[in-house]
Amino acid sequence: MTTWTLTLNRLRALIQRRVRYRVTLGGVLFMLALSLTGTIAFLSGNNLLFLLFAVMLALLLVSGSLSRLVLSGLEIELQLPEHVSARTPTPARVLVRNLKRFTPSFSIRLSGPAIRTGPVYFPLIPGSATIETAIQIVFPRRGRHRENLFLLSTSFPFGFILRTVTVALHRETVVYPCLDDPQPESDLLLESVPGELAAQSRGADQEFHSIRAYVSQDDARHVDWKSTAHTGALQVREFARNQQRTVEIHFDCCINGSRELKAFEDLVERCASFTWRLSLRGVDILFRSQNFALHLSGGAGIYDMLVFLALAEPVESMEIPVTEFPLDDANLLVIFRAHPISDESRDTRIAMPASGDLK
Image (cartoon, helix red, strand yellow):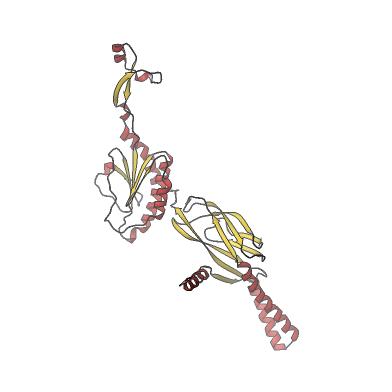
């Protein structure tokens, strides 16, 4: 069983480390010259031409062997920040290690679709050495990235053949949804929240609680002159303390068929961006979804919510729909869902469908 496991691991490593060859312009010209020299040598029977043909053929074989040796034994490590969001340039550091003890690697080019700054060139990587450089990474989508693919290529030593090896980094990285939502509807929704909270809490600070003796820290505007005249000492009115209002965000993972998959991805990004920007304003948030609930107070727990949205998957079922009513009537409810909401109790919430309509 152990032998089979090792064999499968080796085959998997070989498949993941795919090798591609591309003949350069110099290589095409060299091949033409090699063919022409060989043809003339065979037609003429000239020993000098045969010797030249053999040397050229040996150069071609040596070129392939050296390029293979140069690319072997190279290992890549990617160092990313703790929090990464999709489609956002992220500073990172890449470490290229040469595991060969004495043999150096020459003319190595590191590239990949995620590298925003373009290919990185290493003219020399000594044996048993590590070279570190700064790059910018852009992940195209949210989710769990188990293998970050990079390409190592070289045309060493003669530039005839460009040899490229695909390297997979087996390092799990959870990428958050994009937090920069350019949609004007999202800005409108975000700006409407303070007004809604203010409308719900209006008059709360004017709720009378009791009358007590005046102390030096009290506001003179709260002095109750009738009680003062009656008792002969300064008396002030005390009001009930206003409780901070909570915004309940309900994220519905249910969709009606595969046609709403694109709308679901847009919805995840809008919900993540809205909740992130709302938490930066210090708003008390209660985030709820199917089988998930989290209280965000003072920004605490925001990254746990982003991890949930990064790994959220749509559910093609309405067996466990998200509730459309807040836990507390004093709370403001914001619903994110991919399909239209019902017309019941629209005055209890603000809804943000995937279509971008603000209701």
